[in-house]
Length: 410
Image (cartoon, rainbow, N blue to C red; front, side):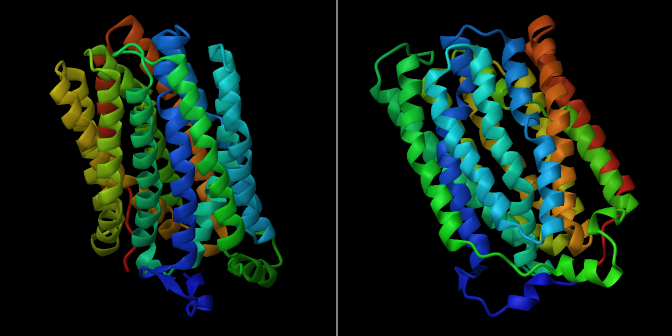
């Protein structure tokens, strides 16, 4: 496979990383400050302020995760076709920035869905082209490390955003255990500033890479989009889909924390701990996947996920929820960057945008039934049933990855 980064390997590096990787990380840092302030605590806004049921919370969470799927597929394919990544990524960040302030006007769960879908359309437009831009910018041997840094900076933004949210909850008088409309509105107002900064960073500091796919397309005389993917990539998508069917929205983890009578401020601080763990371990886990292989790393992460979900099913004390949120951050750190690096390993360079679009599309489309199933299990059987379901599918997916997928030898 051609290493696209070799074309521009003399470009300056920041903290040992390609400048594009660093500045895309900075863009995600500001975006996640904004998104965590507005959307992470949406399930509490829905249940505490708008009076929504667990099924409605599952519907909102599932639609939120699925709304961007078609746009991810299209934007990835289109970035391959036109040979440009930055323009689509910038457009996506801009759409999300425009959508977020409308949460100030949301007075029904339907309105929340509308705003959230608008935000996720922006995410759909940007995600695949952004991931392809990162993969285009680095050599194969530092993919895991680079995606790890991107996830670390993204999640560091989440930590900052949630700390700001905790300060707002602490300062705004109200119910100790429930979200108030006033506190939530302040979160939305503050979140607009970093959202705008994210767009400015990608506009001014990220550079488009020369597109190796266009050269490949010219040599074959055929549209790049018609080139078939390998069976290994297709099997990986099936296994990812199986895992995602049990990976319901994290909204349910927040509802579980509230169910065991955790004060609102502690719920926010639990999310800070989760994201801090995620941020600190993302880059080391990416480096580890470069050294020992993606499959081993992802398998270990899915095992941790399954055990954490079993833990949530059995939990009933606040300190247990604290511990589970911390370990849940380990799962994210292990799997998120490694899975994206694995996609680049399994497909040719001239198909990365399309591949990331399909990968993200599968994850997004399956997320809707995943959250709906969890919401029905939660409301009609027991909260533990939703977590046992997720744990079971995670362990099945882990077995599939171990025995079906063959990792490319370096």
